[in-house]
Length: 175
Image 1 (tube, helix red, strand yellow):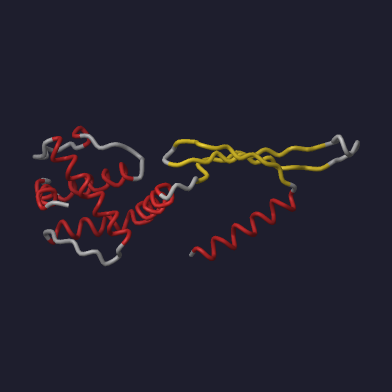
Image 2: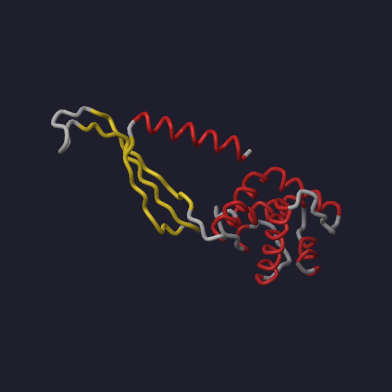
């Protein structure tokens, strides 16, 4: 991260423009939207290249803050305060993005999307009169929004309940 990129933050005419820029940087980082010069109503004295470098600087800064809670920022006090306030507000989004990136960069697949259907089975080849509800679950797995694998399976209600219990136990262990 260069001093030039950090000093570009000083070119924002007021604190509202700076906060808007910081939130746009986070939105782009987590995949909600892209930054453009048109996104800002007031004049900002940044070229497109400076805007890109400053955006990258801010995104790396937020990523570092997510990794190291006591990360030192060597900037003007008002800018430090704006960055810390913005990080506090968007901390969950940033930390979730950092976790997601770490998992995807390690080569693992994540469940990107899922779908389920409730089916009522009234017979099968082995049982002529089988009356049983089943849940059909379809997981679309991938990384960085690219679906790479589909996982499909059926479960009884007892199996679904057991799966939910296991997921809840894993959730408590992660926290």
